[in-house]
Length: 57
Image (tube, rainbow, N blue to C red; front, top):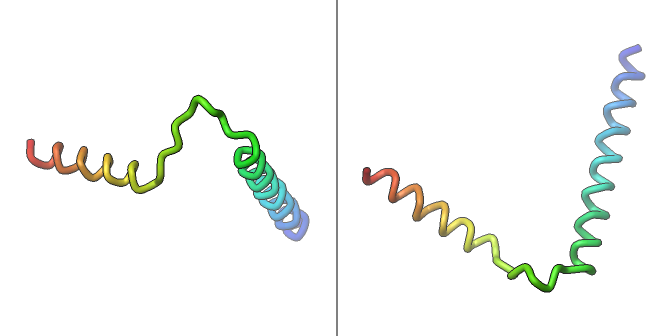
């Protein structure tokens, strides 16, 4: 019984991983031209600035 549960969880994990990979590939091919492309470093910089602002208060 536990082997069946492990197999089902592995199957679900594999399916979700495959969905994420396909979704990212489709997102690379069909980009939204209206959405500005921002790098991850921009988000990190904004989060750091916000945390510093809150820390000073």
